[in-house]
Image 1 (cartoon, one colour):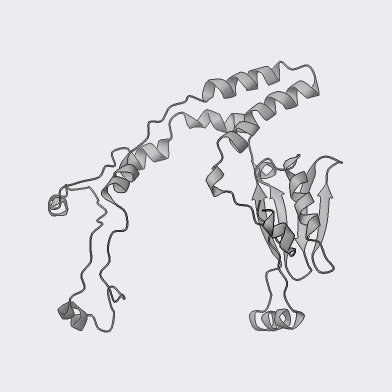
Image 2: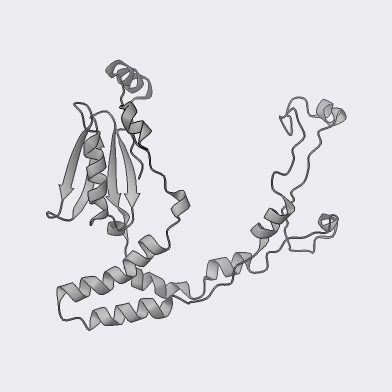
Length: 235
C-alpha cells in the first residue's frame, strides 16, 4: 500500500494556475476488486495522515462497500477507485476469450533469438529483426554528424544484460486454458445458487483468484510516514 502526502503552498499553486491556465487537481488510483474490505485497510491508513489540509472523504454504497475514497486538499487530491466497476463484462466472461490469444499468436508466434552475428546480412524477405549490439561512435562519424549526433553519449553503449538473461527473455512460455475448468465450474455453481450468499461466494471465488493469487507481490511496496524516533527503531 502506498500513501502519498502532498503539501503545496498557496502561492505556488496560484503561480502554476496563472502560468498553465488550469492545474490538475485529481489523480486517480485504481484497485482491482477493492470496493469491499480491501478499501477498509486503505481508509485506516489514510485516516492516520489526515490533517487540516489533507482530508479523507468517502463515497459509500453502504456501511461495508465504498465506491471511491478521496484524500488530499482542494488543490490536489488522490481518488481511489475500484477498476472492477469499470469493466464491461465479468471475469467469467472474459476468461472465455483466453483460449486462443489471437493477437499474440499473430504477432509473436515464431519469435526467437538468433546467435549468428551475421544474421542481419541474410534476413529473409518479409522478416524483421531487432539488433542489440555495442555501439562505437568513431571520430570520423562524429564529424559527419556534428549537427545531429546519432548517439549523444561520451561512452560506448554496452549491453547491460548477460547472455543468460537474454536467453530468459527470449524463452516463450507455453500457453494453455488450464484455468478455464475452474472458472467455468464456479460460474456453473453460481447459476445454480439459491441464495445471495451462494451467488456472492462463487463470484468471489473467481474474482479473488485474479485479484490476489495472480498478483505480482514484488510490485507492491509499503511506505510509512514516521515522526517519532521510537517508532523508527521498532520497524
